[in-house]
Image (cartoon, rainbow, N blue to C red; front, side, top):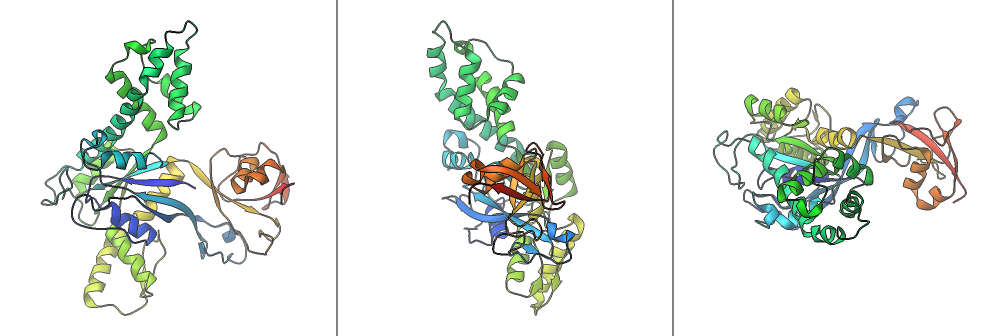
Amino acid sequence: MNSLGLAGKPNAGKSTFFSAATLAEADVGNYPFTTIDPNRGMSHVRTDCPCLDREERCGNEHCRGGKRYVPVELLDVAGLVPGAHEGRGLGNQFLDALSTADVVCNVVDASGGTNAEGEPIEAGTYDPLEDLAFVERELDLWLADIVSRNWESLERGSRAPDFDFDAALTELLVDFGATRGEVAATLRNVEYPADPKAWDEADKEALASELRARTLPIVVIANKADVVSEENLAALREAAERVVPATAEGELALRRAADSGVLAYDPGDGDFEISGELTAEQERGLERVREVMAEWGGTGVQEAMNVAVYDLLDDITVYPVENETRWSDGSGTVLPDAHLLPRGSTPKDLAYAVHSDIGDGYVHAVNARSGRRIADSYELKEGDVIKIVSTAK
């Protein structure tokens, strides 16, 4: 399952985002280090369900009228402050936990209403661009420190006459969780001394920065979009490749109201419909959220997670079934499961995603849309419905 890690300084709105995206209780407070132990919760990315291509909706619990919600893990960890890689604040705890994520969602107080330490100040008096650079910098220095602590083994190995530095460096970085392809691409884009004893800290930091960019991509969530200035948002968009304006508080209010039955709203919608009685204060608050949604096309919370998974990770959603005619499992449940797979995955990759035994016993696959057998080399596409034929039961 994909894991999205919420990063950012204290009081930027990470825990509010977590609560809004999961409807799980998280510590939310107006002071630094509200979150101490990592919060893990289940959230979803949203896509079109294949049942839209059939006469009736599938009725799956994760499908709302053709809006399919696919589970992902959301991780909210302690706020990051400058010097975190040296252990300042709860830095080491934060960074170690964050390293397990597939994507970092950098939640930024785009209103400029908190300083570098996460302490509340007058809105607009702090430059949120500072929060972009320092989060990347702390991640880079944290990884560079890990590389440095393991560098002695490379220096010892270099004394051997048959020592292959690139091979040894690759093995070191693979041990950190990078793939060989990611390491190869990193080494191609970094100039470095051929002798490990000639490396200085700047060389290690350059290596760490390049590797981090490939293994831990970042989407910037410009939070507090209800009070953000146009200048701040334009500056963030110019400085970062992917920026999503969001109001985590607005999304949390909508989800709680929908959960209590006073309004109709599905996460990721561009509007909502009031269906119950509200106090005048509640109605004013929700109308303000509606104004923000009209400006940005939604609250931004669902979009941020979709950008992380479907854009940054370039994943697709594929639906395995047992009955290719009814698109169901053995019990008759239509489109029972949805799997997120990297673009370029094959039917056999899907088989292993379902279960290792299914993958080991893979025979062939059938495209349920056409009813035809497909090649083992076929590259799966978003929304594919696939029957896996396997010797395993």
